[in-house]
Amino acid sequence: MKVVPRILVVDDEEGFRMLLKCGLEDEGFKVTEASDGEEAIRLSREHTYDLALLDLRMPGINGIEVLKVIREVSPSTDCVMITGYQDVQLAVEAIKLGAKDFLPKPQNLDELINRIKNVLRAHTAEAHITEIQADFTSKLLHDLLAPLHSLRSAIDFLEQGTAGQITDQQKNIFQSINSTIKYMDALLSDMIDLSLFESGRVDINKIPTNFDELIPAVCARFIPQTNSKKIVMGVKVNNNVPTIAVDPEKIEQVMINLLDNAIKYTPEGGSIQINVSSTTQDVGGSAHEFAEVTITDTGVGISRGELPLVFDKYKEVLTGKSSEKKTTGLGLAICKSIVEAHGGKMYAESTLGKGSTFKFLLPTESL
Ligand code: ADP
Image 1 (cartoon, rainbow, N blue to C red):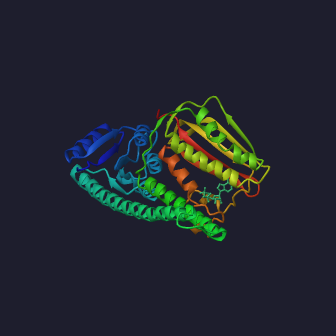
Image 2 (image 1 turned 45 degrees about the vertical axis):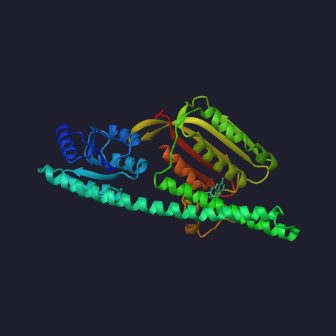
Image 3 (image 1 turned 180 degrees about the vertical axis):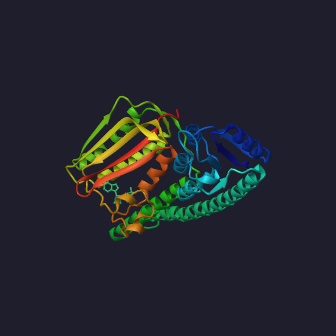
């Protein structure tokens, strides 16, 4: 089936917008219009476009601000700036911010449409290559996981003594093999999760979810671990948090990872505080409401050098520090992908030796 490219045309000049829309529709593209920056930001949060054509100069939120938001909320959308001849300086700034190209508003519409078709051709080719790479990675990871599972079954079989009595020494060896298999299984599963997010193939099944219940319920599951380390855990839910549309299983996964880390990196006798509230943030010049969850611990903290990389999947290579605790080092990268797939944001603050705060924000409007 041929996929029709979707284009978002953002321009405050109605005549030009209509002309461009008609010209692109005649070429067989699916076109959506936005007459100002605010509408463009709303549409790009709700839908994914292959290409956004952004007028640089618009009253209110200008093309550069719209570009910044689209780069953040929909990285797979290519942005092309439509400029006047006097705007070269601004257009160069747009390229630095991730725009694919800038095209001057022409006297001749055909010329503009031809250049847009070239950008779309390159976009389609790039998307195709990314898809092939994602297919290959996914197949490779699953191919590695399958023999690992067979290996585990074989070890279980031997461990149970079905193939003959085993000695205590052999039992210890089997345990060590099992723990390595478990680590490799976790690593491959995390890599599969991440590659699914990166290729945009994860299904986010949003349903109206009550944060007043979800967050405390996940925290309650960690009471045995906090008790055994004599860590005091507090959970505070402000009553201003609305019901929001999220995938509860995925948000649970984020919470589990953050709580697991908080407990792991907080010494005995420390404390962990979880707060859930509602907050307003400026996005592209207008106020938006978010549910905010913070997890603050009094643990070992993270150094200033490592902090900017905590959400990066390459952090262990970049910092040259591999995890001593046989963890995958991909947990926070997955958390960030989940939060961003919900249109949210994730942050970390930390002081070495004093503790860390991990925070995520989820938009409440999409309900
Ligand atoms: P891992 O599987 O290693 O826990 P994560 O991505 O979850 O991977 O965490 C990455 C790294 O960030 C950890 O190895 C640790 O160095 C640091 N980190 C994460 N959470 C905390 C925390 N609450 N306190 C201190 N360090 C943390």
